[in-house]
Image (cartoon, rainbow, N blue to C red; front, side, top):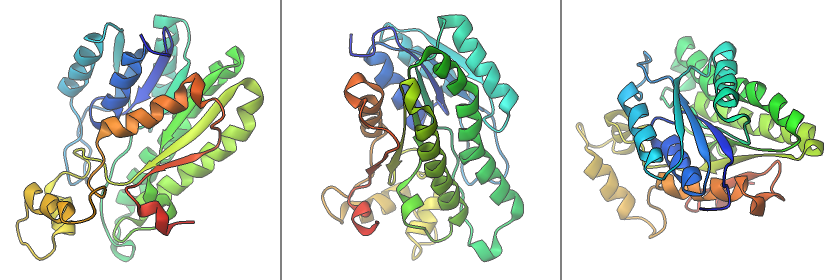
Length: 276
């Protein structure tokens, strides 16, 4: 067992990608987990969201580590549903020690042409969804006077980005939430931090819409076309693997991470060298 023996974690967006990697890392260190995910389509996205089968696969993989995994379909846009996730975790395990507010989406449009629904979906999921997760879990942690809270932001929060200003704005807002909450709950033994990765090798960016943005001179680019461009760059400039982000999260939620609070931890393959 690792250094999270018998801890209980709630992970949003846990059906695949970074959320699944967090679930496996924490379970491997000894934690039981509750994973929630919308696990259904959302109009307007250039890629398919996770499915109930993906959620079931995460459960199976976690249980192979010897830890329990409770799945729930839940939409972070709903405060009621996030309260239900917290209540189920407490019902099953008696407490919540760790929250990883990871659920998020990506889409692209220039700001001058952006459809209002595209904007609203981004803010509702990537920013308000983090607030709903915090609001559902943190009061319980305050009562117990201990907790570890992590939110997934992005390096673009500190940079800005073409064709995804709504995404950058939401992720910048996540930093404001994290820093503010960290001040409010420090006296309760709770730490609150954000991780800011650059491109992570998941379905969120590994899809034809992203490939067309990244390889504009090719009418029908493939994953291989984009990866060839990435691989021609610096040796450490390749896409980040979800497990690499999970390793950083594992440090932040462990006892070794107790002095990290209100931090924006970047994992950016050098992009943070261009930010303040």
